[in-house]
Amino acid sequence: MVKTETQPVEYWINKCEEQAKLIEVLKQQILLMNHRQFGKKSEKREIEGQLFLFNEAEACADLDVPEPEIETITYDRKKQKGKREEDLSGLPVEKIIYELPEDERQCPVHNETMGVIGHEIRREVKIIPPQFTVIEHAREIYGCAPCGKANLPVPIVKAPIPEPVIKNSFASPSAVAHVMAQKFVNAMPLYRQEQDFLRNGFVLSRQTMANWMIKCADDWLRPVYNRFKKLFLERDVGHVDETTMQVLKEPGKAPETKSYMWMYRTSGDTDRHIVIFEYQPNRNHEHPKIFLKEYSGYIHTDGYEAYHKLPENIIVSGCWAHLRRRWDDASKVVPKEKRKESNSYKGLAYCQSLFILEQKYDEQKLNKDERQEQRLKHSLPIAKDFFEWAKTINPLPGTALGKAVTYMFNQQTYLMNFFLDGRLELSNNRGENSMRPLTLGRKNWLFACTVDGAEASAIIYSIVQTAIENGLNPFKYLEYLFEQLPNSNDPVDTFLPWNEKVFEICKMPAKGKESDNGKNKH
Image 1 (cartoon, rainbow, N blue to C red):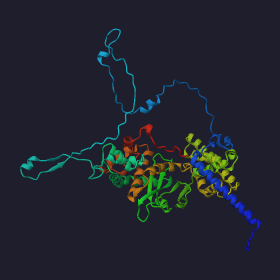
Image 2 (image 1 turned 90 degrees about the vertical axis):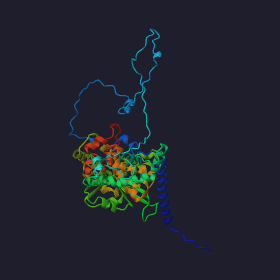
Image 3 (image 1 turned 180 degrees about the vertical axis):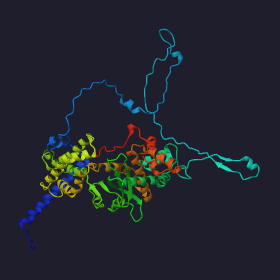
Image 4 (image 1 turned 60 degrees about the horizontal axis):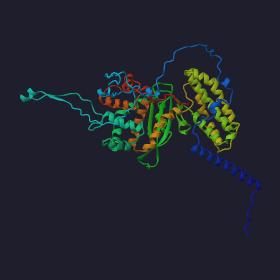
């Protein structure tokens, strides 16, 4: 007969409680996964409409602001251009006239020839696919005929000719710029470009294009990249982020292991925007530490622990958008009928209140000192109340709400650093937006073949994203650099995006400007 050991009742009660907690955590994980897969992605939700769960009048009032004067304005409104006409403005126009033969212009009444009294216009856009032209640079060579006849040494003089972007190659500035822009702006991998060229009657292998990019990035773009880095390190407000990247042929690493691309950029306190990418083989905290060793000031980051090991002269400003995301996740797992009364919803409302206040400060176009004053007066009390309230809710560990509260208190110091300077931003969204072109491109080109290719990619992404952020057409800017740098001894600053001449030549049409320069920063 087998003797079974009976457990005390308390043991089974504890066991049931543990299983109930585990079931609740797993249920929330399933609900959250389903919502991420099939639900809406926006974090704004209905909180946006109700503004605060707090007293909005007290939060936003400023008794020092005078009442606006009422002024009646009358004017005649000029008829606006139609949307189609606006879209087509600025494009060159090719006019085609359709005429009637003379024998069909006779007036049916008077039998006289009718004259043109107007035109009926139909407008359409004509798109010309890439055209390929061979440019022959014919350099004339001059010699003295009388010297030759007299059997004297013949002096030779050659006409000046611009240096090529790559010696002993058929690459032109426009060809290299086009390949780079297609890959690093339009996310078109080299093999697709190769196929597209072939369809248009031009053979250009992906290997040749890869060689062009590595060679030109190292020879001509690296000095500009290094100058960007030096100028960035002289700033005192910036952003940093990182993302994965696969490199197939990296010494000492298997092809499937992760490498990383780190991104550093200026913040909204400047009109000379700089975006710098740096390739590294891993996510070690030493990489930002080394990159920022000459930097002193504020850095916006997410909650990654590596950023909390930066030198003491760097103050980390945490990202409230990452915190809001966690409270939003916690709200999503609460049944709809109970959501507005839940702690998750109230935490999300606290976060959203801070973002709405920042939006108001933007609309008021406050300078950094005015913004700091308004933050300390209105935003800081909300943040303090938020942390005090969060101490009272005691959520179940492991649940979405528990994770939100844990993240919040782990990041408290860095989140509250936001209130130290009026130039700081509530989130690291500006940095994440600059990282997005790389992450979108990575879905298409998937990996870099070699370390040289990864480092060239970092340089080229830095150049094109900095160009876009400063209102330049990235193709024109690359072409300009490849035309000028091989033939100039001018300092690098002459070729930076904010140089007046560079901007005039390479600027983006007003309606095509891509840079948000602060848009979506919240």
